[in-house]
Length: 152
Image (cartoon, rainbow, N blue to C red):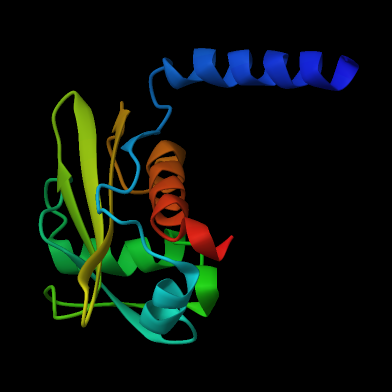
């Protein structure tokens, strides 16, 4: 009984925090149907150098290539992935796209042949001004975990 009350209190606290500025929200979990299975993710990223490309940067003065180099340091290496920055999206890899306004939005897609798009996530965070902001790092981590969730 005490355990379920504590769980309910934790869920309520997380829900309240989600509305705070600077708290990242993964708003759409896997937009791809059917979602990837563990064996598909393991074949796509397991123990491999996974290209990470950015199509648009939300930070003025920071282009997609330098942002990709920052992202690889923020992404957790699930399924044994080793992330490497890429100049442009390729036939496989993880592709980030950002849009900046009052709330920064992000889209992350995992592409792997032969299936193509294995996973796609969308998220958002407000109040982020630089890629060094802890809220930006949290968004990147949460979206990467969501994209590779079967690896957990």
